Image 1 (cartoon, helix red, strand yellow):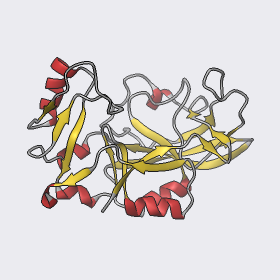
Image 2: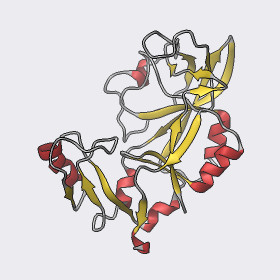
Image 3: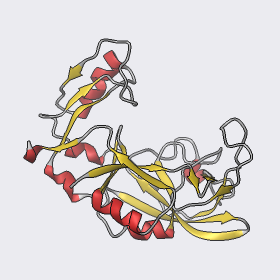
Length: 237
């Protein structure tokens, strides 16, 4: 099984895909408030994000004067957005597609998007950051001090091996700071059970079968590219 990185697109039919915000969401402080949630915690209730609105395209971002559109997948943008959890607004069509596949721990919360005086059914898809870590084979995975763009830093290049993600964090804090990456990422066979994972430094990772279905359904706001590093499975090495 091949895997791909799934990313947001900036444009649809030559129009900018707007970021969404919760300026008009009822009781928004319950989930947009500072310190309310984290990247490994689901919301404590089945909140409804009613309703989300496209952020105006402001100056200074290279999109001055462009007319925004909505798509099947959006980023958050603006003042009233979740600031600690891992969530993203998606259309009902995208949710229905995802639910046909095997996802790492995720939850969907009802939402609406107000666009051009019409309400559209949407969801806020929340995923957790850390579940993928239990699938790493640390006996075969190695790390380096490249930055997030996989470019060498000014410090001497290093390749290191660790016994756990905690050891990775402890070493990087002392020696690499924020600059660290995978030299070789080896996963246990259990990773194959999932078609979607949020994988640190690789972001949204999807199986080829999920990628094919997204393309078949012509879901918008989504693009794919090859992973910046290959994924290996320990039972194939």
